[in-house]
Amino acid sequence: QVQLVESGGGMVQAGGSLRLSCAVSGRTFKGYAMGWFRRAPGKEREFVSTINWSGSATNYADSVKGRCTISRDNAKNTVYLQMDSLKPEDTAVYYCARGKYSWSSSKSDDYNNWGQGTQVTVSS
Image (cartoon, rainbow, N blue to C red; front, side, top):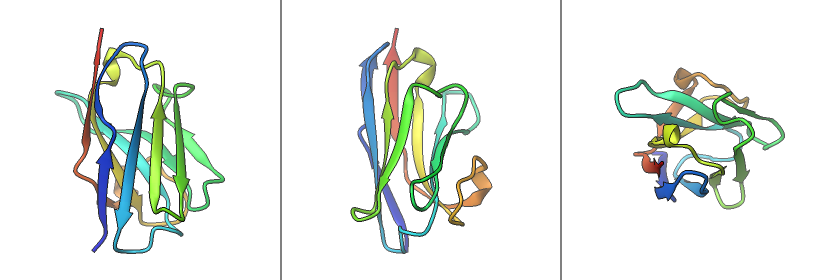
């Protein structure tokens, strides 16, 4: 079974930075796209960022573009999300997900394995 474990969340003041990590075990990591999604209080889950199997292509939600960087280390079976210039509206539970395919996607239904999430809280 594929398991994903997120880490790196926490509390930070507006303007601060966090680096989220997602360690994947079980099924093959290399060859599949990875993504980050988030769910803010009272809101639906939304797309944050995605990266294709090789790391050659990335995509970001408009709300985080320019402030976040997604990367992956296939040798370590780990994907990262570097978040800078954080805003209170970034407060959410962040989820790591493994895609069904090798290409990146912003659609949650294109991912078939999800982590438990890590809380990010940004104070004003």
